[in-house]
Amino acid sequence: MRVTTNAVNFIDGLDGLAAGIVAIAALAFFIYSYLLSYTFNPPNVFSTATFVTAATLGCCLGFLPHNFNPARLFMGDSGALLLGLLLAAATISITGNVDPSAVSGDQVTAALLTNYAKVVWMLGEESTVDETFSSAEQAAVTNYLGKGGRLFVSGAEIGWDLGRSGVSSSADVNFFTNVLRAVYASDSGGTGQVTGTTGGFLSGVSIGFNYTNLLPDTYAANWPDVLRTGSGAVTAAVYGASSSGTSGAIVQYSNSTYRTIVMGFPFETITNETTRATVMTKAMSIAVRFMRFILNCSSSIRRIRRRRLRRAGNDRGRSAAHRPTRGPA
Image (cartoon, rainbow, N blue to C red; front, side):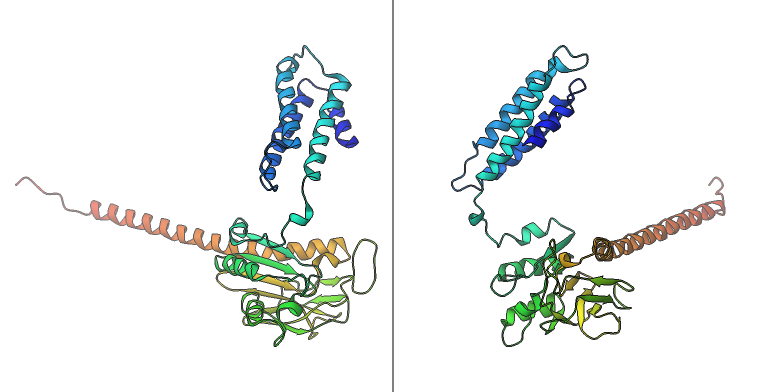
């Protein structure tokens, strides 16, 4: 709260600046809180947050005509601090009205996924109890990928939950093997060192993740899945310091429709910030390269069409030049 109030006070140095910025912020937060209030049980669109932000917006709009350059009135410290206080109070009040226990874990739907060209799905250490991919989520992901989606998923227990033959359901195994294109091999890679393979998108990259050390800011992934490739997939990285290892850590798959990357350990447990950025950048570039290939193909097709049109025009011109002139009948 103190940060918001002081921030507004700091920008109150030019005509209309503080009132204009707070008016925009209040309008944006009013819309957000109004829509969020529909999710309350029962719905309450006239929550404290919507009322406070609407009042703040009204104050700013009423004050702005007198504060435009050249300003005739100034709000001073008391006015600027009050505006910041109102914004902070609205934020705190809306947070207090959201019941965490009322938030469902199965909010990912096919309609939601279609809004994104690429999806990053982090499951941490969610396992059989938490259910890494529910049946509804499996259907949503299958639909999303079938329409050309790009999925990057990481977690230490995905294969343990979905890929164990004879333990996991047949639907789970089918989704893990034939949709994500990964196969569960064993329960632990036995090391926190991962090395990119020659044929994968992480070629030449070495990754260290928190395997046993309980670091203060990163949890330990003690049981990272060992993965094999499903049909058409490629091992992008293996456990150990050598790229020729046999224990798969990351599997990538691509066809003419969709692309997937499955990590057998949580992405967020990678200890080095630069390495995390490298892995994410390379993962996202797979879809970019594919889109660039399509754009290049489209450009080539357009160039070929233009050449054909020019050639056809030249042929018509030559035909007209050599056409004999008819005399009078």
